[in-house]
Image (tube, rainbow, N blue to C red; front, side):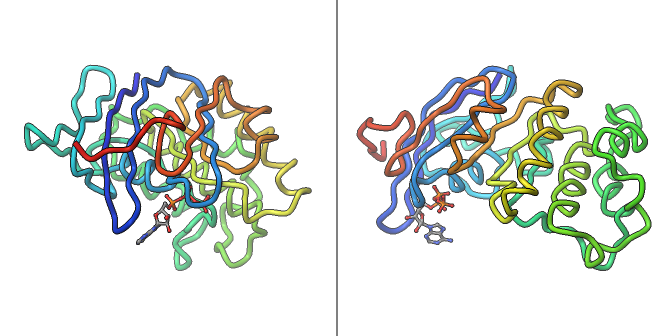
Length: 219
Ligand SMILES: Nc1ncnc2c1ncn2[C@@H]1O[C@H](COP(=O)(O)OP(=O)(O)OP(=O)(O)O)[C@@H](O)[C@H]1O
């Protein structure tokens, strides 16, 4: 499904990541500074690698040697970060529909009501983000990403700003997303308990390297 061999250098930090990832949930674990967020940014198209290639199915998204780079908004990947990053001036409903409204009708694979029911958001839709708890905000961020009908969901420590009680509340929703929508996910976390619960497989990063242990070099 997703195949990449990417090299990226920023100051002292060098990333060398090679993997072939099948559908389902793939956990990416590693110590702080290992390069997990940098890898997700490269996959999302928020950063450009200095060398390498990235393919999704038959489609080449990046091929540095061929001068090819598909911008983030044409990749149709959903992104969820640690702190949700909802638009503060929009209601929950308008936050949820933000990406959905920008899709052509034929591209919309999930409907508003289905996502609202899946994530139990109905009582929240008229509120503003400032009127939500941290866990509710993350559920809305997940709903917004899903309504964009992503081909792949990139989750960067989506639970790490929440306390243990809220984490336990949200994890079943993530499993429900996995089982009911079948959107493939890359799930970056420090927490092995989260990948044990959710992931079909786990990749480990160390010092910018994936697989961990291989020598990083800028080819
Ligand atoms: N915007 C930036 N400018 C310069 N260096 C950065 C920037 N962001 C991260 N780095 C550096 O790049 C390296 C990889 O950081 P990255 O955030 O990808 O790691 P991570 O594994 O996601 O860490 P964490 O688990 O703490 O989020 C680190 O050495 C970090 O200090």
